[in-house]
Image (cartoon, rainbow, N blue to C red; front, side):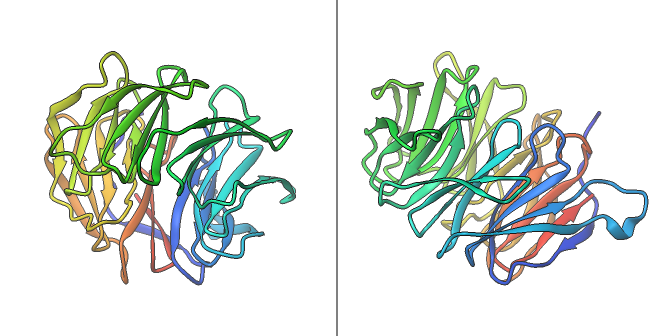
Length: 313
């Protein structure tokens, strides 16, 4: 289905008593929303379209297991489990349905981002504060690979080219491309005018990825071949102001959305790079996360540090 830019806020999910840092939708169906709160809780919400509007948005379960703010959450590829990483330096793997902790992993460093390997739910990749990217095997709890080339904490990781390549960004303003399970990068991207990119997102056609630069520009790179910067594709107008605001792309790839550091929400046209809409989305801080629903193609969810998750349609 074609996507359209949402017109207004149609729902609010209340329940976190501090800010919400990341939200993720259930893979492929998007009927559940997973949120990571800065008070150390993860929550799962039911967000599917029901006939009676009353039952539509509700918190189904709260997962308590972290003693500090949760930095990132991620469902595995089937949605049966999810991972959360927190400033208490633990990564916990949870069973989505029962709420049991399947595994607890740590290397005594703060994990900043977490990702399941797309081809195997038993492997999980984290970017850490000690400049390393670490792969854990969940069933054994062992570290199976370390990727140690960044010079500053690792901010974001993405998989491309059928999960054979891994893109990582860091505070050292470099982008490194890795082969899966080989601890030496195959490509450095480092330009003199580059800024660090605290958040990256793949475009749905898999031909490129988008990076949220701290110079208030969303830049686009090839996801393969030479990983070249697409100099003509730039999305500007928002003020990130040092926050790791996530980028959302509509399922058909026609629109790009992102929050900014002043609590606004922006929508751009992918082809023409024009700002189509901007909304006041959140108060008391940034609009830090935004995700686009995979099936209801004009529904967008945003979260901010005011503790509210909003639904836009």
